Amino acid sequence: MEVSRKADLLSCVHYLPRIRLDEGGVVRSVIDLINGLVGKGVSVTLLTHDAEDCPSHWIRDSLGNPRVQEVEFSGARVPSLAKSQLGRALREADVLHLHSPWYPTNIPLAAMAREAGVPYAVTLHGMLDDWPMQQKRWKKRLYLAWRGRRFLENASCVHCTAELEKEQAARRAPRARWQVLPLVVDLSPYKELPGEDVALVEIPWLQGDVPTILFLSRIHPKKGLECLLKAFVLLRERGIFCKLAIAGTGSQSYVEKVNELIGKLALEDRVRLVGMVGGPLKASLFQWADVFVLPTSQENYGLVFLEAMACATQVVTTSGVDIWPQLEEAGAIIVDQDPEEIARVLEEQTCDLKALQERGIRSRAYVFEKLEMGVLASRYVQLYRDLAEDSRR
View (spheres, helix red, strand yellow):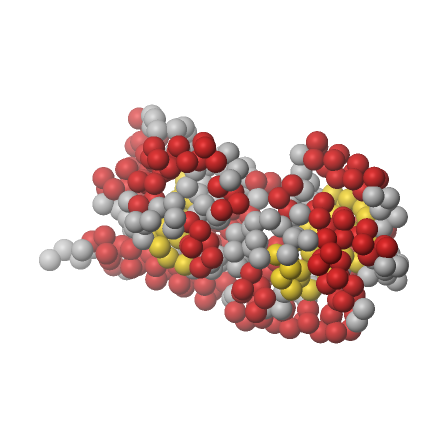
């Protein structure tokens, strides 16, 4: 009997249309997952239309790295050249891993995988949660009715990152086969921290002997920033002085709206937009902050929470985050998206900074112990093996 070439080396194909880091956590999570898989000896091919922000060493040197393959097609139509490229990649794969339920280009890829006898998995990245499903809801419902639901229910696995995500998504594709696994997150940049001085030099406004609250995220209405600003008004009324650093970018119109609200609420002396931060400056800003607050309406995994904890910073967020039970276990404080409650929690937390630091240290230990990249990557390797074996049967 012929021995399958797949018995020794596990091979997978990931597809994501654009590798642009400014498009949010999905791209970052895919990059981290691929790095984790490669670290476990998995052969990975990344299919994309735009490899702009792929790690440079992936492109420069394929030895020991994933293979990046740019392909051109859109919608349900696949040109002959792209079809040949895709077919070759799929024939060499044990599993096809797709990301997001909404890309129309997933549909022909899934069909090609079925024709090649290759199982496919779909990671939702929180996009079937209740809150995002209320945005452009008729368009999304029509897409699900047209092809989206069948695409999900034909998948060998629909991957959610938390049980709460699965509960919400299952109503949209009740016959899908579900798998819950945490995301693979590379926290190695936070093992050695740069110290607080980097942030103080780059952002002198931070200096001073008052508690600092940090909001670091995309500046978008769903993130609850307006709610946080109203909480700062309540703190001022109670005679509590804290600084709020708002890090991130968003649409020009909404950033202008936030600036106008800061002026209207007379918070210019204690609130500052500091722009986009990354690298050592980002880690240093986390270190300097006493509390990281993201009173979001909805979040799936929220890599930023793990980054904050990895920097020993106390996290405050809402139950709109799919992994809020896990965050709470790690030491986060879960609140309603309510200015009064947020103000109360910030007042309580900043009255004892020593205890705050101790809780941050425990959170840091938790994420490095429980969310170690190699351990989680091994679970994806096992998932791929199980899907491939089921398919061969």
